[in-house]
Image (tube, rainbow, N blue to C red; front, top):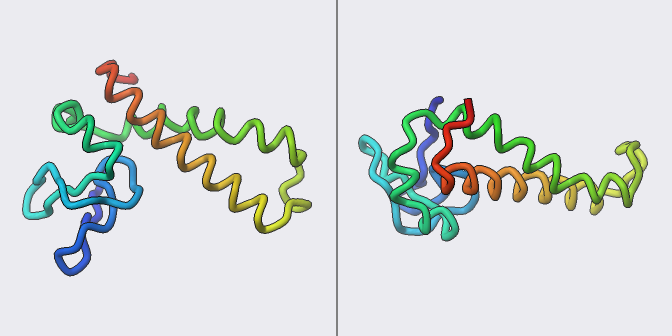
Length: 113
C-alpha cells in the first residue's frame, strides 16, 4: 500500500486509515503525521497494530456494497437513469459504508485473510 500524505502545508487533510477528512491527531508514520479522522482517532491503538491495510480495505468493500444496496433498491439498478443527486448519495453511502466496515474490522482485530 502506498500512503498518500495526510497533510497539505502542515494542515490535516486526509485520514490515514479511511480517507475521510482528518483532524489534528495522528499516528506518526515516517515523516508524515499520519492524521486521522474523528472516528478513526477512537481506534488509534488498534490502527497502530495494523501492518498491512490492503486486506482490510478489500474486506471493507462489502460494507460499501451493503450500505448502498438500499439506494439501488429504491432508485433502480440502472445508474444511467439516476439524477446527479442520487448518484452523489450512492457514492456517499459506499464511501461511508467502506469506512465503517474498515473500522469494524480493525476494532475486532481479526485479520481478514
